[in-house]
Amino acid sequence: MTTESTATTESTMATETTRGQQTGSTETLNTKDMRRILASSFAGSAIEYYDFMLYATAASLVFDKVFFANLGPGFALFASFVTLAVGYVARPLGGLIFGHFGDLVGRKKMLVLSMVIMGAGTIAIGLLPPTAQVGMVAPIALVLLRLVQGVAVGGEWGGAALMAIEHAPQKHRGFAASFANAGGPAGAILGTLALSFFAAISGSQFLVWGWRVPFLLSALLIAVGLVIRLKVSETPAFQRLEAASEKRRVPIVDVLRHSKRAVLLGLAATTAFYVCQAMTTVWGVSVAVESGADKNGVLNIKAGAAVLTLVMCFVSARLSDRFGRRRVLAFGALLGIVAAYPTVLLMTNGTLWGFGLAIFIGNGLVQGVLYGPIAAYVAEQFPTRHRYTGASLAYHTASMLGAGFTPMIITGLTLAAGGALWPVAAFWIGILLVAFVAVRATPEGTRRDLD
Image 1 (cartoon, rainbow, N blue to C red):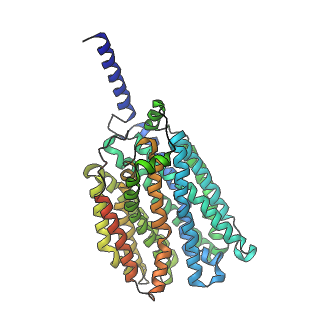
Image 2 (spheres, rainbow, N blue to C red):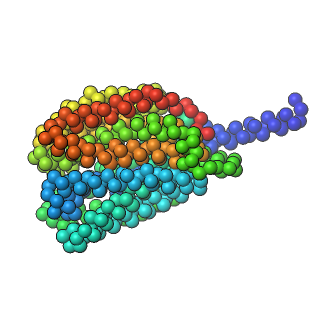
Image 3 (cartoon, rainbow, N blue to C red):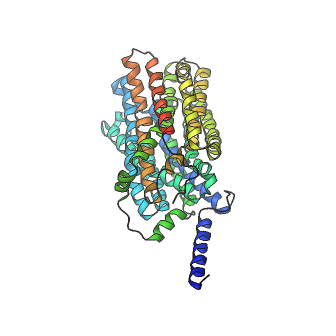
């Protein structure tokens, strides 16, 4: 062997060794750095989704009475759900903005910025005076602050998921990414319990000041989250991309040119679990209370179902690492199709046991199975150079369509059908069928090289 070829071989081996170290050749998540990264993804997502989902619960129980009381009960609730949808409409915009800079300057910087923006918007909502005091300024300001929340959470998910995926060993990517997703139900648990606790202790003053305290507590959570998040390092995949020094296009242009199919399939698959979430935790909460179920009991049951969602998220992510993302997601969609109509009937029977059984099936089991693998499933369809932008575009467009518009669509369907529930179940089943087809049409990414 010549001296030149020996040097080349040694150089290649050194490069591969470095690459193996960067991608987690230890094949374990149980290292100090990985534990910090997973904790950062989980805690950061939990805090931001605490803020975002706290608004969803308040939209069901508070905002129609505080900011839209002059519209009458049915239309006030509809208006409240419209403001909820505004946040979801803003999420794809946030995904594009943060994805653009996340693909160009790094994942970590965007995660820190998104957390600060989210905290500022949530605290401002807690301080917002009611319409009875300041007139139309209040609902207008509420919409604008919801936009701020939407933009911030649009940057959160992509960054948190990629921090976990791009640091993790290949065979554990699904489980690692589930820590970012699991932050969602964890934040929902915190937000729901906080609202339930202050509803209990404030009593008749709940609509005056009780609902505001959980929003103001966001300041403390954001401070804790920033301390955790600032300690993690940039992902190896992004560092390798920067080291290559290649000329990069505007990420969204790259996505639309090379990854349109991945965006559409990822969007269709992701919409399913967001519809499950909206059906059970937003519309379901509202109709259960209106049908006669105790408000505090409903909130506590919702928190319990979120615990099951959290557990199922980790379980299904583990299964997706072993059996593939497509198989687990397809099973979740079929499970939802079978359970949809019975779940709708149970949510509306006016009892706590009926609501509890419905939300444990629809939110805990079906959404949990769909939720666990989805972060890895979407992210694995895009190359590093535009992964933040592409994954965020697919995921957050789905959140806008699935979670943002579903409460309004369902409310409209029930009004148009004179209170009949079959159109609601048909809508849910249709979304799950689309997701099943999309998942089956997607290439399996479990063993794909992220670079």
